[in-house]
Structure formats: structure tokens, C-alpha cells
Amino acid sequence: MTKTSFKPRVFSGIKPSGGLQLGNYLGAIKRWVDMQGPNFETVYCVVDLHAITVWQDPAELAAGTREIAAGMLASGIDPEKSILFNQSRVSAHAELGWIFNCVARVGWMDRMTQWKDKAGKNAEKQSLGLYAYPSLMAADILLYHATHVPVGEDQKQHVELTRDIAAKFNHDYKTEFFPLTTPVIEGPAMRVMNLRDGTKKMSKSGESDMERINMTDDADTISKKLKKARTDPAPLPETLEGLAGRPEARNLVDIYAALSDRTAEQVIAEFAGAGWGTFKPALADLAVEKLAPISVEMKRLMADPAEIDRILRKGAERARAIAEPILARTYEIVGLQRG
Ligand code: TRP
Image 1 (cartoon, protein in one colour):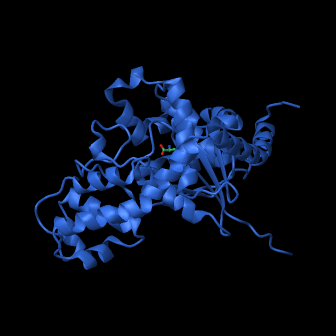
Image 2 (spheres, rainbow, N blue to C red; image 1 turned 90 degrees about the horizontal axis):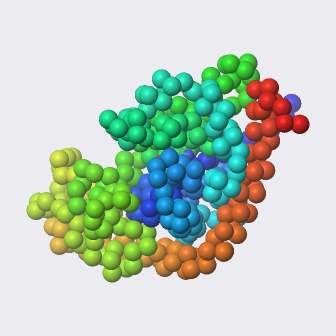
Image 3 (tube, rainbow, N blue to C red; image 1 turned 60 degrees about the horizontal axis):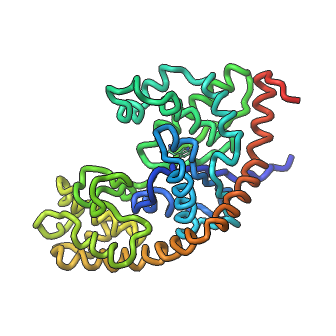
């Protein structure tokens, strides 16, 4: 018997709510770029249906979808090597999401920490979509029979839920149709924190623009923000343990490490004992070198929305070619007739 060669398939998604910032790049996109190549088939999605689980201004949603796509392309997602598309162009996501709403249990959703954090005491005022969000996420992944899902630590629970949904579907319908997916969790350096408060995650929607690096920031802005980032007065320690309890310092070291493809230990070894007057300019120069070209390319792409749409449309066609037979088989297994 010949062994059929099997190329693992990677799926990941990013929400188009607000612009793209350094956390999205170092925490997700940079890694997705590195996974392209002979070892994996890579499918990357701008998850616009997820974005509307909270209110989105329609014009901003459309612009945000193109901005995220431009950022992915500018960062090195190659539409020849990867399938790049936006979720709403492939209606199978919503259809499989519905079936999974009928597989997943309310109790499972109640246990999702992201739901608990986001909904808080106001759960009754949230959209039903926000509650069911993880079930749509499971559909995103399983529609491609994806085996590897690179996500940040905060999404690990949702990928584990995806396994639970696949297992229950397989059990209920006495099939082995859906594979059990593995979350591929990023290393610790990948969680980029706020430049003004190192205990908070860098986000697209903070009060001050100085607390984040936007992927559209130009060289001067990137440099200024990093030089003005909050720190404590102590110099850099001799070892990584010396950064304990110093979240802002730790964050800048982690950013340096991620941008230079090194470990935080290596960065500390190089800068042991250095003051911020040495480290911050070095970090600013490195960040400008790595990020400014992405920002320039992103702006060039965003000036031509028709070209971005053309790429997303083509990606959606390729995505549909994989997703539709899987959805059709799912309908059959469930006993839904469409013929
Ligand atoms: N929930 C993810 C986030 O907020 C985005 C997402 C949606 C996703 N569908 C996905 C990530 C499928 C990985 C795979 O970051």
C-alpha cells in the first residue's frame, strides 16, 4: 500500500475591527508569513463576520477589511503561496457555523473566558453573535479540515472548543469526518503590551495613540513612540529574571527580541547593564528598519482598493474550492437535502 502524502493545513484569522498594530504583526502575522512554504498549506482569513459581533460602522468595516488585507500583504503574506480572503465572501462559514450552533452546548459557551471578560455583567445586552462567536470560529477552522491553528494564548480555549465541537459532531453522527485541531501557541515574546502600561495588552482601541505602534505609522512616529515609551529608571539587568516585576522593561526587551528573531535571553545578554539611553535608540532603529518598509507598502496598497479586492476575490474562489465540498458532505451527514 502506498502512503498518501498529507500536507498539514494551517488556518488562522484576524478581525477587521480598527487598524492593524504591532501586536497583530508580532503576535500573529509575522508567524503566519513564516509558516508559508513547502511544509504547510496556509489559509488566512480576514474574519469580517466575527467583527460584527460588536457594532461596526459599515464604511469603517469595509475600509478596515481592506486595511488588514493590505497589512498582511505588506508583511509578506504571498497570495500565490497562501489563500488570503475575507470570510463573508465564502458563505459556507456562516452555514457551517449554524450547524455547529446546534452541536455546541450553551454550557460550553458560558465557560469561555473571553465571553466572560467581554460581556461581564452586561451579558444580557450583548449580541447573540458574540456569545456564539466560538462556534463560528470552529466552523472557520473545520471548514478547511485545518490541523494547525496559530493563535495567541487568549484564543487557545476557543481552539480547544473547536476540538470539542468536532468530537461531539463525530460522535453524534457516528463519523470521523472532522479532524481534531491542534492550537499552535506563540512563544512568550509574542504578547505585545501597551507602551504606557506594561500590564495591558497593546490594542487598537486604547485612549492614546502613544500607547501603541500602528502598522501605518511612519519612521519618525515609530521612533518617537518607542523613545517615549514608559520605563522604570533602573538599567537593564544581567539576566532575564531581573526583569520580573518590570512589565514595561520586559515588553521593550520582548519587542526587540521578536523584531530581531532572537530570544529575550539573547537580547539581555547583549544589553546587560545598559541604560535606556542606549537601549531605546537601538530598539527604535531596529523597529524603523523592520516596520517602516511595511508601512510604506501598506499605504501603497491601500491607495488601490480595487487591487486588494481583486486579491481577496481570487482568494475566496480558492477557499470555496476547499470549503464547499466539506460543507456539502456535512449537510449529507446531517441529513439536510439540497440536491
Ligand atoms: N477569534 C480570533 C481572534 O479574536 C479570530 C479568529 C476567528 C480566528 N476565526 C478564527 C483565529 C479561526 C484562528 C482561527 O483573534
